Image (tube, rainbow, N blue to C red):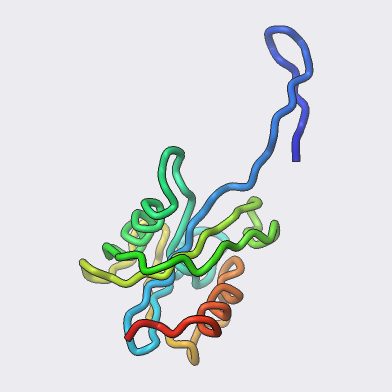
Length: 150
């Protein structure tokens, strides 16, 4: 969507584009079919995949590693991209496009930090009902397409 603004110097109409925000989400595999989720400290509340916004000048991969460490205190190795999720209503705050990575921890002890209030370990059979964003769909895709690393 683009909106028009007036140039403060010449008074002409200038078109400005409004683009979706790039984000990343990370499915951290722990073996035995278990994954790690965070309980969000800020709205929208609920359980979620660790993740967040890509900073200007940052690659998707670097953002995924940074967000995983910021929220779970774990350094991770990215294994592969699961996919991209772009439904304009996936985040009630803004239109975001998320690239989802599957990763495994390589260093550290799990501890909730930054935007994470709590960390939980879940299997396909016991996922929480209150998942934020479109993370229920992402996890359904993950469990139906991919076998977790054991």
